[in-house]
View 1: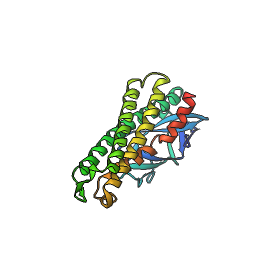
View 2: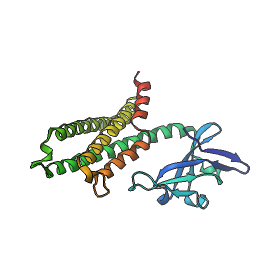
View 3: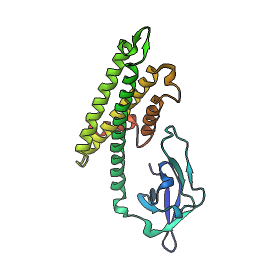
View 4: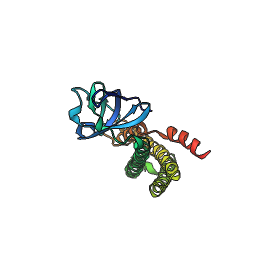
Length: 237
């Protein structure tokens, strides 16, 4: 849902209002394309940092501290109407960008899942307890097999989505399946990694928390697994 708005003024100017949150890397961007509602329809407006008043861009504190996230306040921003991109293509462009962003996020999540599993297995193969390597205990073996199975499923969905991304209908279904599968796989693998590292896993010194934070961040971007499954229910049934 687009909550920001644009209003046409006298002399060919556009007045913007509203607020955007979780805008990645906005502090380093030389161009910003913001989605607004204009005359009841979605529209895209091109902005530069020079168009923004002081304080319009603020750094956010987010779960994944490796990300640079910003909130953008559009109140008081006025630009020439020629900054308005083709209104007839705005809706289709936003849908395409949404799917492309989810495909890229799924790829990042699948890669993160594999790295998280490798990181955890390395620990399970070297840490000893009660005179045995802890990776030899079934209570740890079986969840790691589950994590790897979920990873393989998510990777297959990702490859399928990348292959048929441009196919109308099929591409959207595949992308939403890929994001939902990657969300579940990444979260599960990172959760198990934290637990299997014991007390150390709950500290800043253990990299397991980095994977979990990245999984939460991706779930907050462009829809989590529940969001995409809801969309899939309408597409498939």
